Length: 463
Image 1 (tube, rainbow, N blue to C red):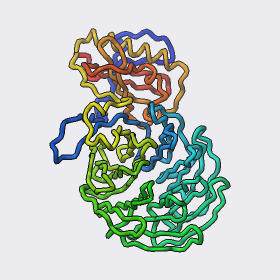
Image 2 (image 1 turned 180 degrees about the vertical axis):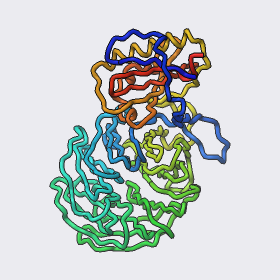
Image 3 (image 1 turned 120 degrees about the horizontal axis):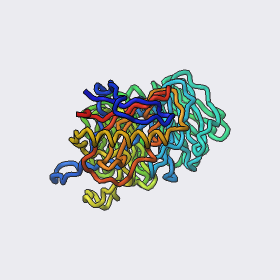
Image 4 (image 1 turned 180 degrees about the horizontal axis):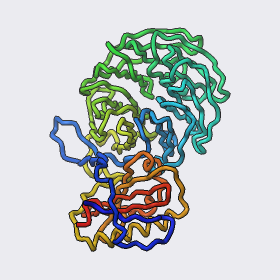
């Protein structure tokens, strides 16, 4: 039986072993955060790279991602109806945006890195100040959920695609509707051509449509896939159109004549999302099979593969320098993958040093000495109690915390949705000691209740 020590965490109540009570946290499932380990592959096998950062905080699927062109901000949106703005280099959570009344399906950032636009199941488009997180305006016009957004490279025009079978063109600076295009089916994905003269859309019926933005006419319809086109992507150099579908394939088309160049196979389930690197040298794909694959769009050859998510991958975004790929998944996490330059493919282990690791994964210790556990329990309580005096909240927060034998806080993981919302602001982040090498650690459950009660108990028991 595992005991806990229970007291009011906003007072200086003395910790004693006589206050041991039962913690019901034994049945809580451990979060499935398994580290990726680099191993030298066989020549014919794809190379697996480790994730450099895992970001926690959403309480449902992470359905959309966008990275600002200045490489400062990563934005993520979820079926939980929330948007989070992170600092790309550190993983620090900067803002939580609330405004949508239902799931958010799409995000886009303006080329000047000042504006964030979101759309979702509430049929609304919301325009935000990326730096401050303030809502600028809400655009109304679609009769069904907004599934996809795109912004022209000059930053003037916003395009939105919807399940109402329309594409709307908006003046981004004024929010006024400029043009409405009637499509053949639900619009799953849209993208502007590099010259901003045409728009490419992918539909539920498997077709790709090319539109003139001068007069709104449909220029061409391409039967691209046997099932829905979930994602369309254009290489920044304007040469290649990529399409992805639940039919498990990715197709690469020559943009100038729409001739099929390559059909990419390898995913074992539906392919939901695509992203070209800004240098046009890489194409990333995310799938229901939980994998992310990196392709050479010139040759159609696979060059990398990652298997770090526990559930399907729904969204991808490249950093401006093409060195970081972000992925969002049904497992409620965002992962950042560090990429070497194309000239160094396949990379050596020395190129894989992560920038930050927000979720270290060392092995827990088998220490069961009651005296050691009691001392560490006292130490952990004291330091949390001192750092939470001014914090107020309305929900119970549960964390799994790992300590070294000398009391240094090595890592922490939220164990419920409320705790995930506090994952960056919690004082545990200030207490965490970076650069602790993997070693024997002792795990504790920490439960903080709105009533002011704090519970701390070692995982593994006092005996």
